[in-house]
Structure formats: structure tokens, C-alpha cells
Length: 295
Image (cartoon, rainbow, N blue to C red; front, side, top):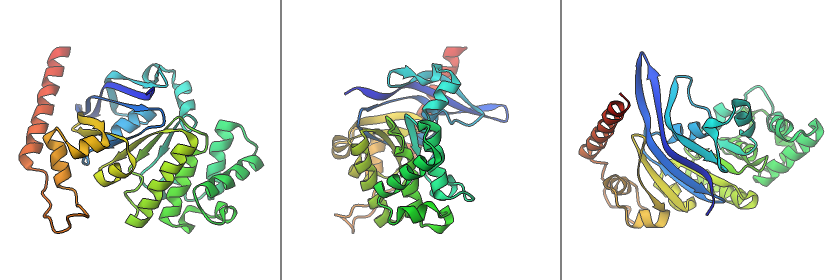
């Protein structure tokens, strides 16, 4: 399968008060054409930072210490900044985590969708609003013309997330990065959103990098998965294989800590503190070797 996205040996550090903290330590992954790959790990694992690195939206105090990010065969890190910015929203799109803070509260829904269409597809204002109506209908929003005239606070959280999904797929991107898009939603709406993303992925032929801490979500939507901890890839493979036969102790611990509908009375086992301590010790040891190697 041809890789739409290929991240290889990516190192990212965040500088603060004269010191640098490594957040990605040689992370690598690939997302094939039309594939949904899950990127899994606990809070602070570096999942969203990897997504931001692909999007070119790292914090101002972030430093990329090495590696490549190939999108459709071209290294994004070597690309001129104006050209790379031109890909965002057009060929590489984002579904953000929090719909209430991701939409402009003082602009109507239709205007926010239309500005993306006018910028990337050079549509007229009228044509952009017509296309925005079609996009809202595509994500199963009732009365799309009425919703176009509303402000974000006038629609529900689930509808706001649908608006963001519509915006992400508006320009037929090759890659969509979904950064915890179901975290703020209840279970019923979460299921609808997952089904919607899968339906649009098939319709538009896009690849999806689905960032989440929820192994249940990964099992539902992702064909392949990558397990990340402390900025390092610990395990990857076909989702069904990883979940059935996890090789790394951390993956096994995550599975043991996940609620099971088929075993509701079974006690959950938290990830052992000793395992987390050993993983961080190994990460810091690699940091020291990296510094020594560059000295």
C-alpha cells in the first residue's frame, strides 16, 4: 500500500526557561492511501504533538531535532513555508478535539465553512454557500440552510463536531488528522461521529490518522494502530492482531485497564507504576545517549 504519510525518526523538543524537554523521540509511522491508522497512548504520550508536527502547527518554542515527514512523497519539513501552508485545509485537514473552541463564536456557521471553500477552491460567495449547504447535508445535519445562519453556540456539541468534520472533508483532502474528535461527546453521539468519519473517508478516499487514548474507538474504526509512550513508538501493526496478541507490556497494560462490555464485573487493573517508571527511565537514557552522540 502506497504511504500517503510517512513519518520517520522524528525528534521534537519543547524549550522552556532555558531547558528543552523531548516530546517525540524518534517516532515513526506510516498511513497508507485510504487507511485509518490509530495513534494511541495516554495523555502526554506525544500523540497530538506528532499530529501538530505533520500539520506544521507546533508551538513557537518547539524545535525539530531530526527526522522526515513525507506527504505524498514530499518532505514537508524541507518544503517552503508558503507552499506548506497552502496544503493545510486543502490536501491535509484537521478535525480538532474541542468543537466549541475551534469555531469562531462571532461568525455564522455558513461563513466559516465558506471561507475555507473560497480560499482553497476559488469559489464565489454564492457558490461557496451552496457547497456549504451540501456539506452540512452530507454530515447528516437537518435543515442545513437554517443551520448555515446560526452561530456555533446555537447548535449542539454533536452538531458543532459535524460542522468541523464537514470542513475537514470540504476540499477532498488526501489526509485527515482527527485529534481526539470524540472526547467531548457522549457515547451515543460518539458512535454517530465515528460512523460519519468512516463514511466520508470511503466517499472521499482520504487517509485518516486517528489520534485517541481510547482503545475501544481504535477497535471500531482503525485497520492499523501505533502505540506511543513518552514520544516513542512501542508497538504497531494490524489492529486486530495488536489487540488479540499484544507484544509490549505497555500495550497489554492498556488493554487490562480498558473496560470490557463482555466482562462488566471484571475489576480494572491500572497500568503498573513500576512499568511507567521503567519506560520513562528508558526514555531518559535514550535522551542522554542522543545528547552524547551529538556532542
